[in-house]
Length: 471
Image (cartoon, rainbow, N blue to C red):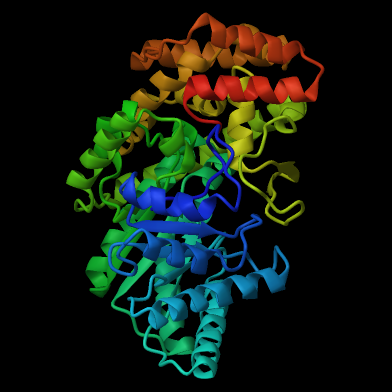
């Protein structure tokens, strides 16, 4: 699934996104395109425009080319934007119908699903709009669009089976919608932003395990969309991590191919990654033993608590960097999507990740202290559940720089992180395996001292190009 995430160094306007969708299919081998309205200035008719452009390029609309909007939350953005994005989804199917094509829109993603009733409310609204628009246009309602809940907090992910159970039952009870396969979107970024890298990775492992068990018990299919980006903090879906990622995450049915993976990656390396992922995609997930799951849940609570404490110590010192991370997509100026941890407002995950890398503090190091302190039993449970930890840290420790970090944070806080890095590197045998050139650190040093906001933004992009992602 190609997405419109602002995680690349290339700026893409809403106008460019129509042709971008076609390129994602023809060049980057994606058979599904997320048309993203969440906090973005995406035109309501973009889905229709993509259908029209696809026909120009002889793309098989509705067969091997699906469009899946992620619509705004009606309680976090203007309700009018929410409704118009749903209308645009239905109109795209009507446009395809008039052209004699299969419907390209089968699903609509609802972000930040905390309460399944939010998703069910949108499902009912979607069915009403579909019925109304089809009747007014004189077309049969033969394709019901189905809502996909996006589950992106630790608390919901460790109970993903309960979320899906409640959602499925509510669809039947309240929307009279009977489906034999539930599609659910599991996101890495927001759970990492709020709870840290270790906790968010483990929570996804539990989510996948629980959904597999639920599917077997209920004899209802579950198809997982796995939302992951290039940096380890956001999933480490990158060519240099191909084999570790495939071993870790192959039980998904769909994975997001975000902007940085397409535009900040050597094309041949990209194709090798996608080919390898397709070989293993849909592998049978392993189901955790009850005792191991219980142990891992305790680790999630402890690791996330330590991460939040460390985060609170970092935020006051690197906050100025958040404002100089450029946005590479057109965003809504003000929306309610800002995240909070312990009452402190955070930027979105991509901006947060970009700022920390630019400060020489990759975000995965904020919970390394937990690994450094962990006893053998906890460490064994972590590595059994999450064997890719060493690969993730090997990448990120290459971009940790104590000297740069001290430009932003008090020495005692940086030294505490450095000590955790030293212990974990020794105990787990982690080697910083990326060659980071001196020019990268010159740019980082310059960024720490520069006063001009425009120059700071340019330096953030230069650093991102070297890493292969913005955030």
